Image 1 (tube, rainbow, N blue to C red):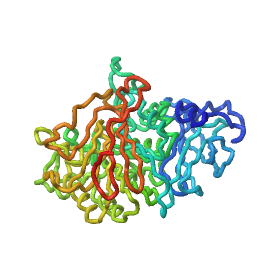
Image 2 (tube, one colour):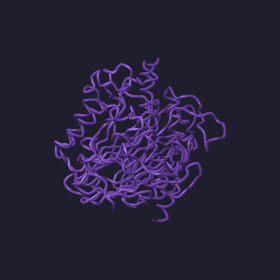
Image 3 (spheres, rainbow, N blue to C red):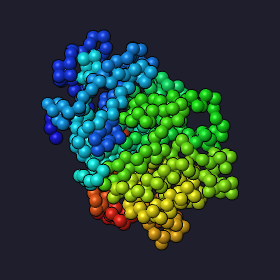
Image 4 (cartoon, one colour):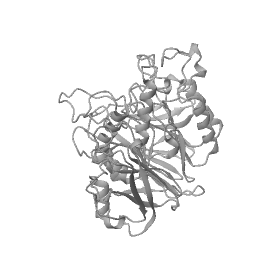
Length: 508
């Protein structure tokens, strides 16, 4: 790695050289505005989304210390990190109503290619980001190093996991939800750090401030700057255990002002993520489930398992009640189920990767009860999808999961009640970035006698590293022993291979 790359991607230092190339001196009227870093996402063969948000005083009143006037932001993309060969450039107008966020949808780039990008506003130069386009749709391209994680509670620990992911220099990063947390803990000295605002987030300014607080972290900025991201939220971006019409066993009715709160939460999410314009919220709804093709190598089906849950038949939230109409219940909603099966039937890539939020495989505890905030609460919905991809001849379905703050490796069975039933897919569950604090060693899969299809379990915090090729997917469960102490090393807890055309987990 060059000295420039190490400075930018490992230490997260803002790069301010090259101001003359982008024009002008720094304006005294606007302090340095790029304190939240840069990001890219949703790559295509010919382009990618570039993101930043102007915030000279990131925690000020939810507006980042910006004036109410619009601000011109120049951007450029180059084939080298010194920007001697700029291939695309332009200008974006950042406005107060969108928290001066910037979403540039660059096109005209070469497929399967590495690029560098940066921004300028009021004479200030942003940090430099590295990104990558997807291969052309009719080619496999290079093997893909991809990492994914979820659940980054700021107060529970430092973001060493993000730093270690950045050091892998992957071609793509997936974040599967709980990027922020909407509640805070009492400042009693038991945690490594605390949110500035202790109140539960309920309105736009507070959500914006919370994103700014998280994005000021240098380790998170390093992970965003090193590769394009595919993101989907879970519940904490809005409210804990939110789903569908906001009914769970503890909150069976809609709270006052709920629609506005959800609208504010999703607006802040869009403003702070490298998403395309099609994801910009419309009221309290946001279109987030989408497909991203990685040439002929892989198709990423990114799901939204929160907004569309259809469990009206139960009447009391997530309680499992098959007698009340189980077949009509759907965790992603029937429309999204059909969308997913339609995409899987196209078999456009060797690997069909399903990025989603909650535990997919059956998981029975010693009392025989299943987790209701997961696919176990919607077994008919899961069964429709698994049978659907088998009927459609999908050779390599791999489900990626977050949410549970533990790492799991699971084989998906045609019939979970029959240990000899065929394996029809694989689930990889990432642990958290920091949520739950320091993990601990686990002595094996809990209750494996009741769950023989669950093959690996770890309580440590971490991420999953994968390498996708035409013949196999190499999988490494990576972890750090402590997140309450900065800069711990990343270690590999377990490795597997998923062979093309052979669902399930094999030893490497």
